[in-house]
Image (cartoon, rainbow, N blue to C red; front, side, top):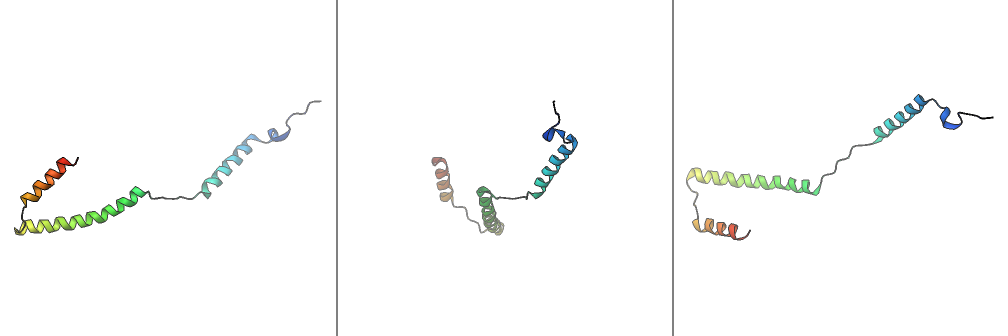
Length: 88
């Protein structure tokens, strides 16, 4: 005598699919979001502080140029150019 539908094959396939769907949804809802800031991003935060210092220096130079008290130092400019082109 042969007996069919033993074990899990006798379960309604629709119900089996719904059980899988419910398990997936429960797992997805239990997961939490997590954010990690990379070391490069942390360094970029310090760049904003430097840019604030740079902005202050630009404002200072702008005021000096407008008032006429800014002095161009040709030797410093030439030295910086030489350093730039020789230290590649």
